[in-house]
Image 1: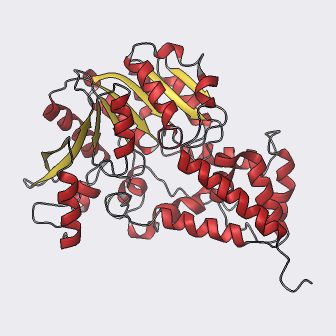
Image 2 (image 1 turned 90 degrees about the vertical axis):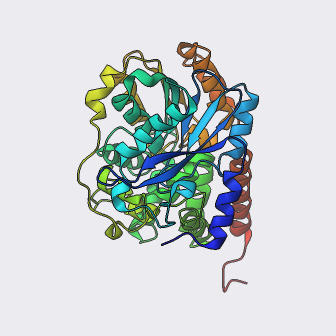
Image 3 (image 1 turned 135 degrees about the vertical axis):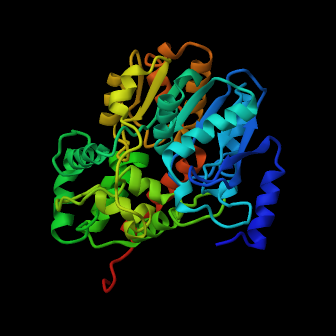
Amino acid sequence: MTMNAKRRRVHDKLAALPGVRAVRRGVSPDSDDQFDLFYVRAGRKSTRPVVIVPGGPGVASVQPYRSFRRHAAAAGLDVIMVEHRGIGMSRHTDAGADLPPSAITVEQVVDDIAAVLDDAGSHEAVLYGTSYGSYLAAGFGVRHPDRVAAMVLDSPLLSATDIEAVRSAIRGLLWDGTDPRTAPLVPKVHRLVADGTLAGNGGELPGLLYGFGGAALLDRELDLLLRRRTLVWRGMRRLSRLSTRKAPYRNEVDLVGRIAFRELNYAGVPDGLPLDPALDMADMIGSARFYEPFEAEPFDLTTQMPHFHWPTVVLSGGRDLTTPPAVAERIAELVPRAVLVSMPTAAHSILDTRERAALAVLRAVCGGVAEQLSATAPELDALPQRMVIRAAVSAIAAAAALEAALPLPGST
């Protein structure tokens, strides 16, 4: 597929933004062809910029994080964000065609970061990666250890076997009743699975409701489902599917999804038990049948992380059921002298859900006081969610209350 005129206009508009540059990169190791890899820099330049690596794979950098970069620059940070190859501004060859599958691998993406730092005139950087971006940040540490000044791993991934930790977290919370905060909800979930309402559901929507609104909001929605009131539930499911659809220059999974399946095993293998996240993972990122099956991870982070010699902060949300706290805790054990910052009421990706907390963490890391962050975790956790998330939670709560008050069809 080649770049059409509309996409070219948007591309040129973004390329003209302050701080946006392109660096020439090889399309793939077995080709002499090159393409333009774009990145953006904001804030007063320093010798050690902060490289922010978003999640995904599929999330763009230049367009979606314009507001974040303004806030980061206002906080005194020097921020670089790389437009991931195969996404947004870095999607096409010089001829305007999509990059080929051979161009889309984790190692090439990691080396793109190094090339951007070269172009920016910086030998070292602070790496902040969230979710999938944490794997890239850690991979950068494996391949370019002399270029890491410090690292923040936000809602991190560790390995292709993380899905077992996700299963354990979801089922412990909603099926086994191991957490007193959600134990009263467990019988309701059992009934909804037994009657087919949640059969075949991997727990994505319940997990999102719990992550952003806590046990109370999830309990309210479960009660609605038990009463066969499904308007809010169906609306949230539609919105969830819309959020994963291709949105040029914002979220483009179609080319880079091969990383998720082929190298990181996002799809996993369903185990046939209730609330299996493997059922949602493939649906969330696109049908696995369009990509190569899992082959092998590019890095063995479990073996490599004990060699990380730079200050490392691991951020974990207590309500994160996408990359649950158990994974973050394991990483904090592996990385020497890592600082684990647990935020009990936070959901997945502090960068995307608690921007003020993410900026506070970065100021501490860049200021050389990362070791103080564990003690300030309660204050960080008290910082508010992003306004758009607070508004969404309020809207869901209001819609649930309205649906609960509506008469059932056929009632008088």
